[in-house]
Length: 362
Ligand SMILES: Nc1nc2c(ncn2[C@@H]2O[C@H](COP(=O)(O)OP(=O)(O)OP(=O)(O)O)[C@@H](O)[C@H]2O)c(=O)[nH]1
Ligand SMILES: [Mg+2]
Image: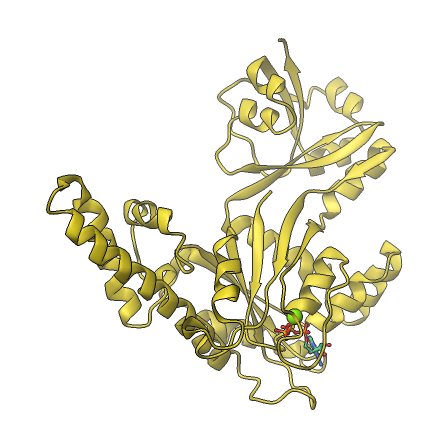
């Protein structure tokens, strides 16, 4: 399962966001370092399409896609030199697939410091870059020495030098325009900034109208990061309150009341999904409707393999239809009678929103 790590200054709202995503009971409190040990939980990927397909099929069981969320302790200036939770904090970040920066833009009388998300971003990025710089320099010294005997180290040294150049200017690697070969050469070092980033801008409940402007401001700051970064603004507090309402109709009513549409958690997980190249297909029937995660560009047999390796090994063909077309037709059998189920072979590339049924033989 993919892991997202929540990273930011103390009091940014990381634990509140974690609770909203996982329904978890992490301590969220208006003092720094409320979180010491990381909280790890599973977030259901909210996806309206699953519920609507389940309703259509009158499914007994409904299974959403899931991702793992890690709520990491707050980071402060000097963390790369051991300040605050220091190195412990950095070790937690090495274990995640994508970093989610939580940047505080809300005011709270109990919390000191300016609510400027760009200032917070600069502190966090600098600490991560400095920690990476130290690791890169150490390895570079070592590799340069070894290269006298081992001529194959040239590419690695060149990758490390490119990384060093960016990092010593305080620039995280996701902003450094490194090509895929260089990124791959650096992968064994689990550098903190050699991965993709989702930035959550946490605005106050009175500033919902400012969300687009807050997003734009942070996006402008990331203008050199290309598609390594996505930005999403939300009021974590309100999203957390909405997420705590178990009745879907009531929850929708609350979000609607604040003009928040489907809610930002859905958009957030979708952005995180997109960032890591993850897509969703569905299976639906009376027994179960279920969302399955696959990577963009996966062929039908690979998609089938997410269910069971036998499905991939013995793949014969898939019947496929987009979820909304299926909903319009009303049922799988009606879609078949109308000749709307496409029959696809092993070269078919799965699309987000496909509903699939596989034929296999082992
Ligand atoms: N007004 C307001 N308060 C918020 C919002 N999001 C979080 N808070 C409050 O800010 C305080 C800090 O939130 P946490 O979620 O504990 O922050 P954290 O980032 O986990 O902090 P550390 O674990 O100390 O690093 C809590 O009292 C939250 O209730 C928000 O959108 N609006
Ligand atoms: Mg916390």
